[in-house]
Image (cartoon, rainbow, N blue to C red; front, side):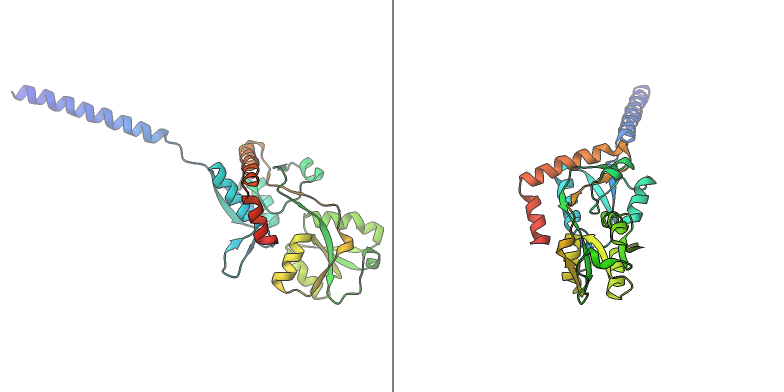
Length: 257
C-alpha cells in the first residue's frame, strides 16, 4: 500500500512540474504590447497647447487619439517642443512626431518620412496691431522673427534677399510673439491658423497681413526611422477611417469653428 501511495505521489509531482513548466513557457513567450512614443510641440495652438484647465489639447492631440482608437494601438504623447521632438526621434527616444509639421521636399530629402497630409496650412506674416507695415516692401533693413526649423522660417528665408530684411530665430512661438510685441522685431512668420488662434486666445496686440500668405502645404505625421513604417501605415488607415465616419470634421470644427 505504501508503495502504491508513493508511486501516486511521484506521478502527481511529475504532473505539477510539467504544468508549471508549461505555464512558465507560456509566460515567457507572452509578448508585451507595443507602446509607441510620439513627440509633439508644447505650444502650437490650435494643434497642441495647454487649455485653461491645464489639459494638453488640440487638433493634433485629438486626431492622434481618434486614429489610435480606430487602429487599436497604444501610444504615449510627450510634449517636448519642436526641436526636442525631432532630436528624440533621431536619437531613437521617440518613434514619431505630430506637431504641425509641413510636408516638404527638403524635409523628405533630409530623412523625414511623412504620413498622408491631415491638414493644409499656409504661412503668413504678422505685425504689431499698431504697426504701419503693410507688406514685404516695408521690411527693408528691418528685423523679423521666425521659429527654428519651421516652414515659416523657410518662407521668410525665401523672401529675405528680395526684400532686404534680417532674420532672428527663436526656439518657440510664444517667445517669438513677445519679441514682436516688445518691438525687438517688426514682424514674425507663422502658420496662419496657429497665428489666428494665438491672437484670439492670448488676446495679443498683433495683426495678420492677409496679403502675405504663401500657397501653403500639408501637415503630416512624421517618423525618422523606416523601421517604424508600421506606425505611419496605421496613421494613414486611421486617418482615412475617421474622415469617412465624420470624426475628423468634428475635431476640426471644435478648434477652428
